[in-house]
Image 1 (cartoon, rainbow, N blue to C red):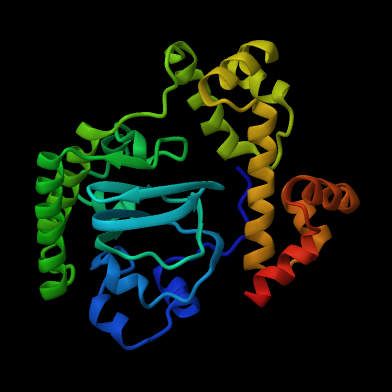
Image 2: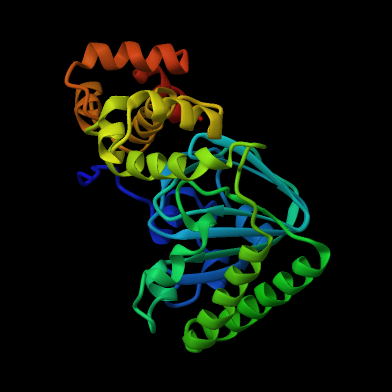
Length: 304
């Protein structure tokens, strides 16, 4: 996948741009917070200046609620969680949120290399589907599972606030245990009776995340998967309710919105970044999908 020109917002960059106060976060974000941090979700989000426009982070975030609700757009789709539910934003995924929520719970934020520091094997995380771009970002826990997850999150929070990353091995072990508990409760977004199409749909969405800037045709992805475009259309539509063309268009639109929100690139530069050489065509595409022109969308973001 070509290197993106979008400035991903790691924790320090996000803090500088969107935190309303620079004092309280100093107490919450200890030395090494770029690798891992744990904080009460209500303490963090009361400090954030809203709205947060579409952006992406090189780290994974997990929100585990103990009360209330949380709303966020992930990959362009709206999601809501309530008590005893988790919302996961995988590293590299686009997210945004607009309105303040009333809730309590935990926010865990980590780089995958922090978790893999000792094992140094990416295979360790591939079994956690919710950490994949195409996974279901919501995990619903039973009361027993939630009680255990809350204890793990509180243990992570307590030690992190006291010691930062001094006890990194303990933090890694507790975090991995929490991921394993979430894995037990995890349910893929699998429509009834469509299991035979689900794996192929996931393969397509994984390839789309890698190649959407250069490959815009269903036939391109069918070729990579060694199947016919018709079979790919049928499988993806059955598994997700959306055609491959819709997935491709939505991915291009979302990337455009991130570029408009996070950069000062011209419309022509943004068009070129997502593989559209004709700026006029890109503008028509964007307005058809979003209802406003790219420049009007940028003005709306700036005004908010």
